[in-house]
Image (cartoon, rainbow, N blue to C red; front, side):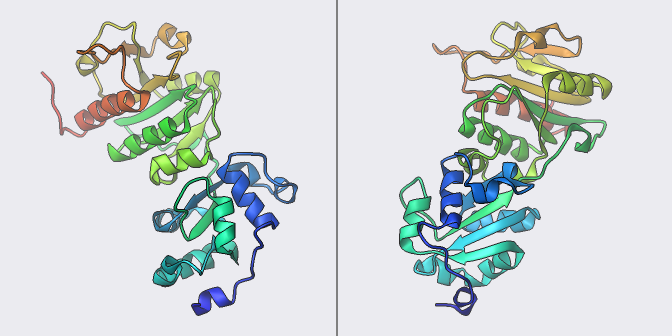
Length: 285
């Protein structure tokens, strides 16, 4: 066993540390030992080398790491993992049995990292003349939310805002689907009325994807500050968006037999259209 692991205490398969990790994986209530911590409501869990590098690169607070030295990957990546241990508040060695108990999938990785998502507010979003962000209105599938965050990051977008929450922003499938974008994209949870005031005050246009719209999304004007709004997977957007003076509803043409795209794909198309036009990479007309 590498020296960096020899000096770590052991967390038992039935101990509070493993129980905490398992509860986070299952998105369940935390053990009593941790509920009282100030950051407990923002705890999330991820696993593997990609998570280690993303957390360190983005200065995400690391509450705890659990590593299984029995796995060959633990030895192969010991040098890099030493930096994760150094950044963590606590670090423990766990057994193969504990790995299996924690993970909800086959082929669990050699390490689990419990981090703390930053707590951001609308005023923390840095404003500029031309910008693209996304508003997720009532999305409930964590994989979809993670995919939207990934798309915002990929197109060089500026923020993501979640209203009418139906899913924990710390859900492990959300973190996994985002491939690290949950750490790189300013991600804010807000109340709807609060968001409306912020958008109007700061001169945003809300480009709302809506099956009842008539304007093709490529015909929209994406100059200035744009907030792309995508709605619930089953019910769509909240009707109040159609009533706002700063809203413009658009539709993505469906040329086949299906009525609409998955919300992640739809928001990706519109975000890219906005961001790439603002950057002068794509020009229409």
